Amino acid sequence: MAEPDKHRTRLWEGVGLFLKLGATAFGGPAAHIALMRDEVVRRRRWVDDQHFLDLLGATHLIPGPISTEMAIHLGYVHAGWPGLIAAGVSFIVPAMLIVLTLAWAYATCRTTPEADGLLYGIKPVVVIAIVAQALWELGRKAVTGPLTAIVGAAAMILYLLGQNEIALLVVGGLVVMVIANRRHWAKTPLSAMGPLGLALGSLAAEPFNLAQLFWIFQKIGSVLYGSGYVLLAFLRADFVVRLGWLTDAQLIDAISIGQVTPGPVFTTATFIGYLLGGVPGALLATLGIFLPSFIFVAISNPFVSRLRDSPGTSALLAGVNVSSRGLIAGGTLELGRAALVDPLTVVIALVTGVALARFKVNATWLVLAGGVVGLVTTTAG
Image (tube, rainbow, N blue to C red; front, side, top):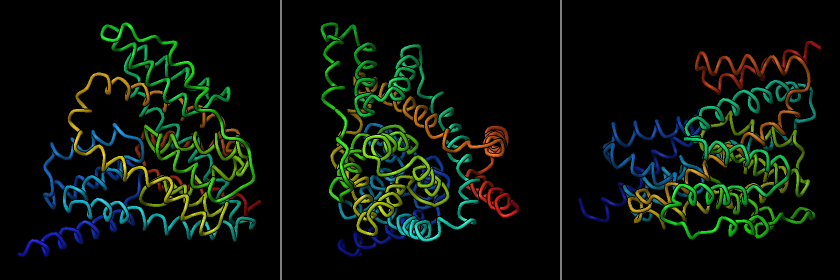
């Protein structure tokens, strides 16, 4: 086979695979990674297990959605620079189109009793049960000792007190890095970290505009570590608290849609963009939150092994990750007040939590079941 034909074949193989995954991969980042491994290691043999794990480790060293960045990495390995772009876009676009359709339906039908009933039952499932369960699982991995436990708790408390979430991630990462490497960096003063919180000040409240929307999502995509669930803390801090463009209820609805659709959880940005600015807003929000991932993967790929093996980088990442768990906890507590509105929603959350923790029921089915309960209850009432 001629070289150009070989590259073209590899490119279209990547496009086909990631279009399929973007349209059918339910269950969040962990499920996406498992599906990718099954496809590219076991079935197609694009990479071996060690190479796959190396790429997965690289995604934890840079901000952004892990499963999307894995798709971008794998596209680059299989088909070079064209594959990098094509794989990422192919994984994002099907989910974006599904969410865009649901956003249109939500904006059109949200005032009907049926829509209210569905969302009434879905909110406690998503915000309390699923996010809290994810927080517990992720937190156990992130808290590796007293230092990370203290940093995570401090991040949660300071977030609830209104401190800037980006500053909390940065300072949390630096505190763990400096203390963990204090013997090597004894001359590094912790007081030097203090001004970071001031340097990363809050955005000023202002009327909605598309440029600001794009900037906010680009900022989030550039600094968000940990998992897609950290997204809710960032979204609430910017769109609910600082700018007042969304209510807590609307934000929970957006997160819920992200849970019942396949592909990247970050397509929640598509939903919010549509609510605020129609189709142009949806496209700009999606571009803004995913664009940094393409850039970070392209830059970091040649340096993967060196970054991963550095004690300083490893400790920084540990601090950022545990701080991100603190932000998830703070955001969950805040949004819980809008989700748990009566005894039935508390029961739904508790039953869902047990189903997840004890019986390992797929989260997608639980979200749908919550919606059915809410719909039946509302209709019967």
